[in-house]
Length: 122
Image (cartoon, rainbow, N blue to C red):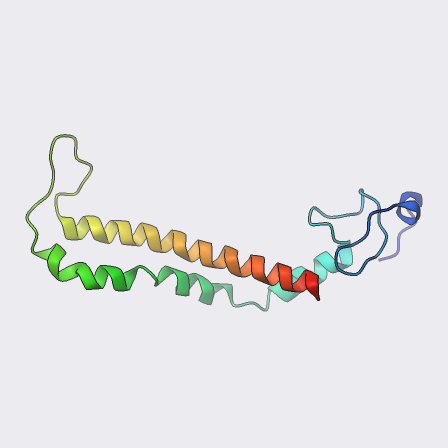
């Protein structure tokens, strides 16, 4: 990207990836130039983020499966002001669904972070 900005030529800011001189007005939040930022997003489209979400979301299910026999025969739970469905197996299922959603999102965020670090190091 060529610019006619007079501040870009005299600035001390450089792109973190290609070392191009740029002013603060033309730098992205990550400290890269526009060309490198566009190249990053194009390269991120090749990363299978759905697979990472599914992989992260599947992490808590073996733990639930290993405890299912004990949970299904437990007596009803509850008590004064208890936040429960009354069935321990159903409570554990709801918590597992909630945890799997967050673990899937965490796996995607981690993969994006790793991809960004590798991209900037290249």
